Image (cartoon, rainbow, N blue to C red; front, side, top):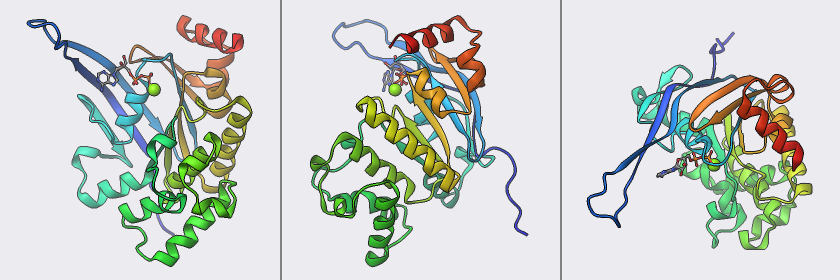
Length: 268
Ligand SMILES: Nc1ncnc2c1ncn2[C@@H]1O[C@H](COP(=O)(O)OP(=O)(O)O)[C@@H](O)[C@H]1O
Ligand SMILES: [Mg+2]
């Protein structure tokens, strides 16, 4: 029997990110340092959904970028399967990048307007050197298009010909095609109509069941996060202010800031 690696897939330990803001217009003004993420530690287990919620500017996206290797922390460690990113050899780093994928709020913005959907969904297979055979890639893309509920003919279209919801399905297909262990979803439905939001959220849930993917689900809306997540992490000004099961955090929030988020979620 093959040994299944025990423990969490992805962790960060005491991670911080400082930004230095330059005010070029005013000569002699000292640069201001700003902590967007401040001493955050968390772990994600296989197949679970961890929600990260907080008001705009609370550091959610920066934390997501750090966890997914898109941004370096100024302090702290990110580990994938127990190995710190900074200690990884090339092969380990490649495996990490393959296993941790992203979905963003604005899917069209991350798609080359002159590429057909077929190329967009198949691109990670090329860049991550997973499949160089054209016919095989076509088949894998076709399977993905079907799995995310798009029509087969979508493959020949361009991003501008699709709706926001269809584009987000394309983004999901592009993330899923490399069979990641984790997808970091950063406000994936915030730009969509409410009826389309529910369809995308339910699609993410179905795909999670089928593929045993873990999600880091980032949103400013604690109602949406509660719908998706097993556990919730509440962030305020770069720090974690409350964590717990979704039920605890949403229905019995302890922190004053979390209570405010819940109240505003019911009001909207
Ligand atoms: N590249 C950057 N340079 C300077 N400040 C940044 C940069 N990216 C984010 N910030 C600041 O860090 C804080 C957290 O941003 P972000 O992580 O995007 O928050 P959220 O996703 O919760 O809205 C914000 O105040 C934002 O202005
Ligand atoms: Mg954000």
